Length: 433
Image (cartoon, one colour):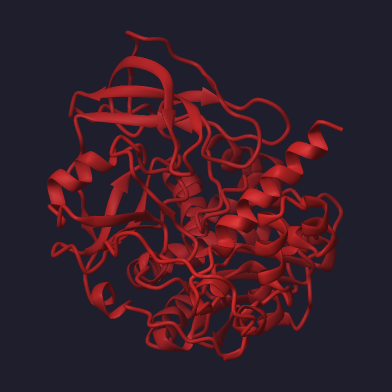
């Protein structure tokens, strides 16, 4: 087994061929005020207020933050702490949908108007639209594109959706190729890269012709890079290495190496913000798994509770439910948990019950598959002994939590649990110094 050729059954065939469907809206939305890296947004509404679709209901706080908008029109019926997909609690605006979808007035623009706008104005549009990385990181996009005086050699659009089951980015490319290329045109104007590359995996080779047609129609110079179908090819550091040959350390900013990376869906949201005047209030989500018949790629409004999705799609009751992919996603136990801007997938998998965990047998498989050249079995050992400083010394913070180690482990050692908890303990130790 090798970190360069790690193969995981993709299961993407289940949803790749299906057209995007719109999921029926729920009666109640749970809009978290934190669904981005950075400081939590501050509510701009109070209980009893009527809000319109696209209206800002949470404003930025601090230098790195992101506003939040209402996906529907209706009444604010509560503001309370609710559980996030990562099991942390966050202040949440609860909106009762009136199903009228009254919208605020939006400013729509044409492609010919692009160069009439100063770069600062376009970044402000992206900022005010609440766009964050939709690949899962949820880093505020306006921060990434505000490069100051730095030079960008390569702008990479990440279409390498390496997690099993997930085809949300695939469906965005397939259905919105022209909009994607126009979104790229906006980013090109902002960061002026020497090279633009769209990365797609070999198993999705059929997307190449769709992209080439859109690139030609928009008269853009963009390279399409066919990437190995391996895991975790879609991770930012692995993607940069595959496209540019540059090795970037965990925690190092790609812009310092002349690289900017954006997810496919994020760039499509940039298009929506500039040309349609629409903030980020909905996204394509892959809903799949062996315990669900009504699989597909669904357009789902952000803040849609899991309990509503279960009611509409009727999965098997005895399901393991994951937000995201099976490797890096979060298992969900509370059905009030709602979709966020980074929710690319919702999976209903067979519930294996209690997994039998055994002791490490020193086989070394976890080391072989680690894309960051770490020794995951050491982290589990140090965590068990509460030797957190040793975890730091062995570079635990370089771990990208891709889950490859645990997937490869024949003893089912809870490596990712040890790594995540170890990182949290180290951060608490740092704060309490």
